[in-house]
Length: 150
Image (cartoon, rainbow, N blue to C red; front, side):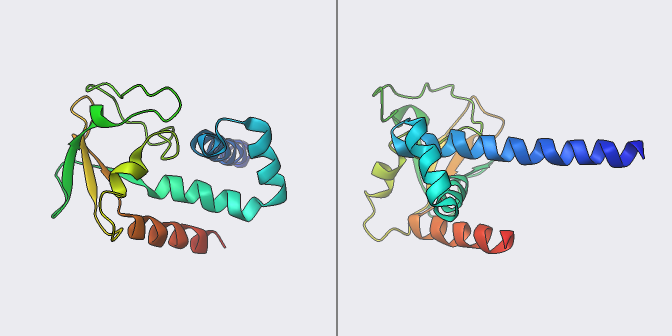
């Protein structure tokens, strides 16, 4: 009985953490306007889930540069709201790194076909590279994530 109760509590905590991660990842999409984001969640929950999945699909960490990827320094990435750059010793936390908060799309738009994988050197992190999927891969991974939820 105690195991069942403990598993239930852990499951509820995981769902709550997942929802919180979504809010952290998607809030910058709404220019950090929490009321606008919460309204969107109520009015269009499926679209909110898609935006969250898209933000999650944007990145992964790697020990090596994927074949054909172009490499940038993480310090080239700017916060869209403050204009400040990420430090060169930035430590990646995928649960809170928002695709929408930084100018990652600007890097992607340098490649008009939308099919270029990009890497950012992150020597301060556990893995030395933050990989930004191509726009087309982000869409594919997002759609897979959404399909697997249903």
